[in-house]
Amino acid sequence: MAEELFTTNGYASTSLDAIVAGAQVTKGALYHHFSGKQALFEAVFERVEADASKRIQKSLRGHQDPWEKARAGLRAFLGVVQEPGYRRIVIQEGPSVLGYERYREQEERSTFANVLEIVRAVLSAGPWELDEAMLQTFARIFFGAMSTAGESVSSAEDPIAAATRVETAIGFILAGFQALADAGVELPAGE
Image (cartoon, rainbow, N blue to C red):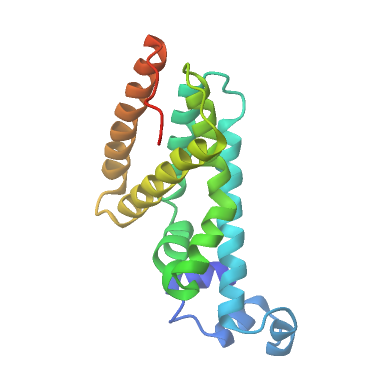
């Protein structure tokens, strides 16, 4: 019930009275589990993020080809960011309700592992011997890019067109990495 109300009305316009009435519980029962509306919102946020992460993870399974794995993960992610609940709770409300630091911690806990898995797969397709620090650097760069892409798709007037543009742009980047891998081109060593 809380997820539905937060999605429809937003955090500020959702009252605890509406939540307990919809859930048919008392305020005392709600306070037994949550310290207040923000704690309840955070629990809803975590569940929405975890569900999204699981759907993206599921899309990665069964793909041995790293390039197709990356494209499948991208398509799943672009689908998730267009869902009303994810868009409202995670992208629109999450940063302001949780605060930037807490919001980033939650995102990293739930979706960063998917990005890291994809980056490992793509970079292992080439002749590159990258240490863990460099893999983490690539993953953080792509994680930031995907977070920004998700925000732009979810807030777009036409989310489907925006998702298509993001998929095309990331497709160009993947094609560049694939061409480098296929040609056996070494990446420059980091300092």
